[in-house]
Length: 161
Image 1 (cartoon, helix red, strand yellow):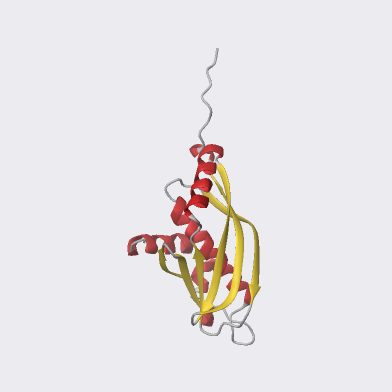
Image 2 (cartoon, one colour):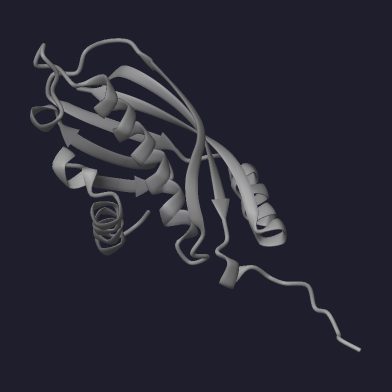
C-alpha cells in the first residue's frame, strides 16, 4: 500500500508532465495490492450526450496503467511509453470515470524489472477496468515499454589498450 504522500507525488507528476490531466480533473485515489486507481469527473470529460467522452475514458484508463508503472519504477527513473492499446466500451458513464489498473502477478513484474535491469528496456501488458458506481463500463489493455535513460544505462566495462 502506498501512503498519501506517494499518491500525492504521483498525482503531481501526472499534472506536471501530462498537462491534459489537470484539465481532465484527474485524481489519484489509491494504490495497493489490488492495483492503482485514478478518477476524473464526467463534468470535465463529457460528450454531446452528457456522458463521458470515449477519448477521455481511454485516456483515464491509459493513465491508470501509466501511473502504476511510474510508481513501480520511479526509483529506476525509467521512461515509460505506451506501444499498443485496445479498449472496449460496455456502457455509458454519467458521473465519475474510475480506472483501476490491476497489479500484475509478482513473477511478471519481476521478469519486467529484470529485463529492464539487464537490457535497459522492458515491455509489460497491463489491464484496466473502468468503472462507474461499481459496474464495469469499459476494459482496457495496454502494452507499455520502459526504457532506462542513457545516463542510467549500464555500459559494458571495456579496457582500452
